[in-house]
Image 1 (spheres, rainbow, N blue to C red):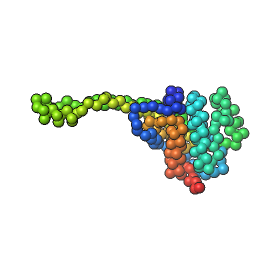
Image 2: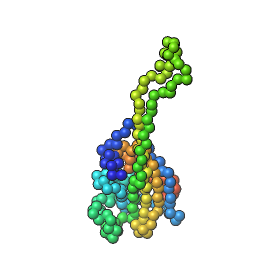
Image 3: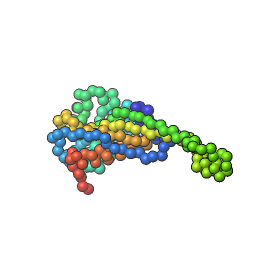
Image 4: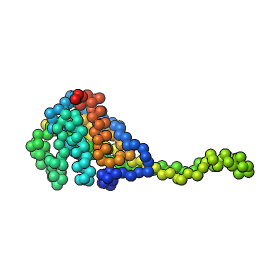
Length: 209
């Protein structure tokens, strides 16, 4: 998992030119969840990763996306030192001191790569070599093409929203991203799709400019 975000921090290079895409495969919301109006609320953005550089970039993107919905986002790396991340008492204290109402967490839970090899065309069902016209049609029907190797990278990500006051999970979603290119674009796309899902499910109130 570490290698993925080290690569993403610069640029993930693959032999396939397909655009990155993110889709949610499953979601859940608390039965008593009301439509949350993010305006005026402080939300801590958390990207759970041991790659500090990638984490900082991702949390900054989440903060910007939260601002688009009227919330006051705050990057967790600015509140909690890495050495204290496993100290729950310290974490709660710092969130309370910062006036944080909710927490948005993102974590990659699986990474897979699929490689496809495209070889030359099939052998003919007849012998085309005995005539020029037969071979000409066959030859141009299957001209030489270098073997193509394409690699698709798939990340599975969990996105969670918690209430700090209630210490409860409000919304959860699992998504799939194909061919992520870099952390910033990947997280921005993920945040947009998560907000769309939450709005459709009545968890996030639609904010008009």
